[in-house]
Length: 87
Image 1 (cartoon, helix red, strand yellow):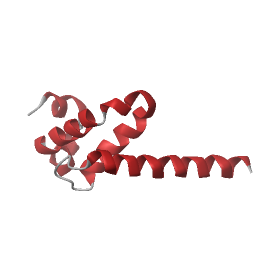
Image 2: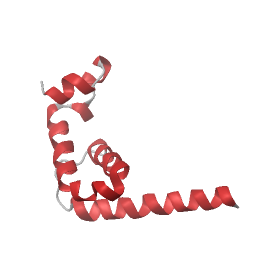
Image 3: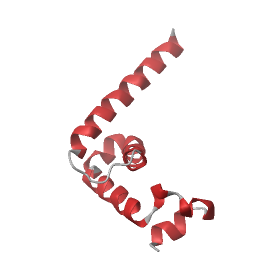
Image 4: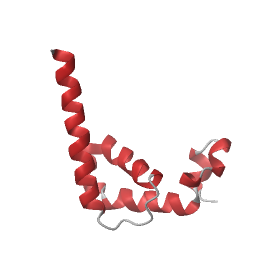
């Protein structure tokens, strides 16, 4: 079992397929592929990594394109919510 699984998961999560060794390695690969976005979009990168793995994706193919779309939708949603609160 990897250090990540031992230290970050509750025992009840150990059987969750999203946190299998294979999925944790994929999550790390996605994170590394998008690490150049961390300075500007740290939270969104973390959320996207979880989203990508949870949706059942198995590779990082075209990850940049998918992240750009996710980023666009997330920022649009955030903008819409902030405008709704001020009006």
